[in-house]
Image (tube, rainbow, N blue to C red; front, side, top):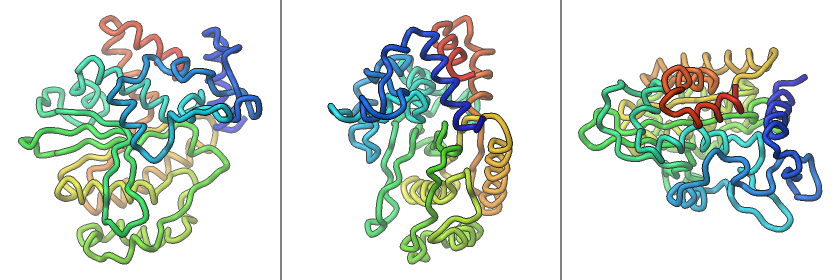
Length: 291
């Protein structure tokens, strides 16, 4: 069994165990593998907050758009955005952003600077660049904090699918100014432009664009942290994915970028050990579904 199929089967079993088997449809409703929920709410621990729904509506991914012929992307059992919402929105709803940021290793437990959380935040690099990166989660601190933002890139089944990913568009290499303080990342960027033949599981070009956007919008490379949170799976694919993450970390470290990674399983276990009694329903949901 591949890592991708393992994730799909685990999510299908969760759906069957929770009486959702007759509420599944294909990506094209009557066509495709029945691994999408008929209603988006069936795939979420709690409905989208109004502000969170607005975040996704304004983003480029069309995650929550559905019509008569196609299911919403977020209604897929293996949706990365659904996983991200199920894990992170709870802490926004309960006004405890400092706790989830601490659990992710982004700050000290005593951090009192956090002001907001936004999903699918669009950050521009330069007007002439093709698109603005959409970062899965951005937690912002107030102006008194040294670190202005904690950015989170979330992955579920994507690294293990057969779709692959592209390299870095050469247009990003034409502006020397944006690369002046990250020479090692520039070297890597040249190597994976226009095609990425170094990384099979890690979408390195996407992370590099996130770094460029975060530098631009938060005043430099020391003013943000970037977390890559990913779902561990079975077999050699997971090992190789982890190895590629470690290689990318070593490159960013040389440029003094505050980048680190964490598996969803590690995060969920940390939260379960800490919040099982105080947040029982939430912990039972995320452990039952994702561990």
